[in-house]
Picture: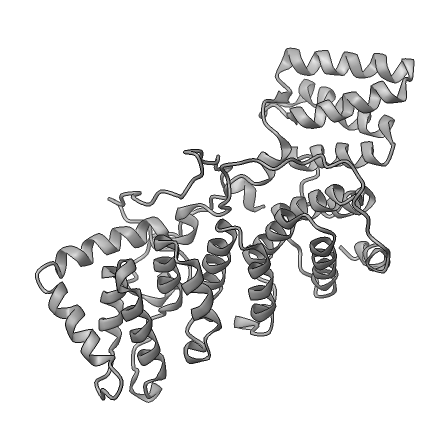
Length: 401
């Protein structure tokens, strides 16, 4: 992606404007980005069920004891098993106790900790399940809990929770903190970058465009290759903010230029740049592929087609009008026009595979560093929060390429 450096760097110094027509619309109902299984939330609930059954008769006494252990002046220690059980028993009313236990555990003499259990992702899953985004945000920033959440999965779960609650500015703030930590020698975790780009796209402001372009330059400088979803968020934001030339340049870094969102964004950028004949060529390329391809039908979103049609009418060129009308008819006859907006497709939920089953124990650090191991009898009990009863589609593994 070295080709992006001089173009984007020079664009960073230009004055941005916002008088362009907004062509990617806001849709109600879809706010979350990563699927529950991707974050390990459904299996977290399965483990909660098991712990609740195991401790059903002693849970009230256990809570009472933990409250005593965490009172000011108490010299009692919170052990790994204590905190582990509390995290799987806790409801919203237990959060003050959970936070006190976390703090006590993290501040205890680390020489007395012989286990290697990783708590960060489990705590963040609890916050995510209970939708306690403010508590998650404050705990991550708390000096008393320093080091507890320094795992890639903890970052991803926290940012996803903030994103889901439309706290997009806080996503960017937390990202700046994450960059300073470079866990496992990684400064730009791919899933974290996707969430940051998504937050910038949702903010849809000149400031968020400047932020994401600066990030893009940083990524380029360290040789980071962003996932396609990050590419499309950045390109869509640039187009929305009246910078189609930037959006088009970013798209040229996509691994699969023939993917449907890449095609749609390319058409929008070319239309906004007044290159109607080039946009028409992108549309026509699909008709050629139909002859040779046995794969899924390539589609264009209905709002993209409408914007293209409006541009053709405005151009008032007889040859281009005739050619577009032919392509449009072909698309309608062969199912190439999708009945959804591009914005909806860009913001679809991302689903990734569970880790491969192995013989690691239920509480092994490997499992909590990534996702939970998918059990044979796993019950997918976790349901995403939705607005107005709507939920999003899950495009599957291909979204992560």
